[in-house]
Length: 497
Image (cartoon, rainbow, N blue to C red; front, side, top):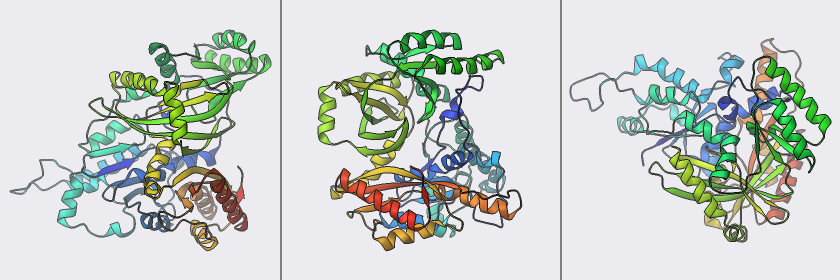
């Protein structure tokens, strides 16, 4: 396999959503937005030694070195080094651009100076673009060294791209920095990721369908009134994710307020499109992860138990054999086979995640929604490939943090090492930090904005620490997390979850 570029922008649902759709009420959180923009660091498990992780912001060199020491060897490129005070901070609208848009801008900027001279005997085709057009000039760590001719030729042969998700900016990047192997078209990806699609797919394959589609505030109230007679229901945006874009409706008074909110938007020219589902007596959340190849072949990757808190994702861990056996007996995998076949027939290939659940009475709800992209559970499955030879598995989770003044990521790594919590070699138990900028981005932006006079109050910048918790069993992993909380408390870091 030739090397690949691994890149993408998390929360693609906000970019897939039609701008003329009405929105459910929500509380804006600028700190959350910055953190999500930096989650692309979490894609490193999909990289091999010759692959390139192209991230929005420069990964902390100490974290990169640490991950390399665990066996996660990968090359890095980045677009912004927020710690480089010689460079001005990017404007907010530039910082939050899709990674494919940033990559396209970089590739187009470099093309005029990186065209290969058409010398006699050149083995590059006319108008070929040197690797630097594919991999931007921001090169981390020892990769700043000049490449040898052989290495440059090897890098140039890279024609594989592994996106987190396909967005409206992906095609432009493929043209500007390619050629790459084909990806599904955007229209197909958007359609399959909509909750409307997954609801209709259930009907197509003859499975129980809980959702009711509505296309106006009036329809929402009418359908909602019927559901409220039996209990609370969930009002879902077609592209809502993990606690954002989903509302629990438990009374006619609340439903009326939401309907009024939607009516106002409809009066301004927006249109409503939502899915209503009864609040089911859920016992267990889980997800299954698959790869549909270009030729339509399907590959099973993993089943992950999901930990959720109040509709919010809070972690993934690989399901055990007893859980898999339960799903087999319930016919879960035959339902997946039907669904995967339809996705392939509709033109999709690539990674796909099915969110599912088991109810208190034992019923398996095979498809709650479909994520035609990479996912947190898939990241955990790839992390586990490093621990599996030792008979271990990790719990991918995160802690939401409030950072004290002067905090640095290196302090956290040092404290974890001193406490003995930090995993230092595969086969050990411990905590594995997975990303640096999700922790530090708001602290860095705040510090620099105060320094340049564009911000006056510091507050307590928020961060998010993603970790793999590798332990003997669930109880041991919980103990490790409690010890992590104590380390953070000793560093005067506030933990919100």
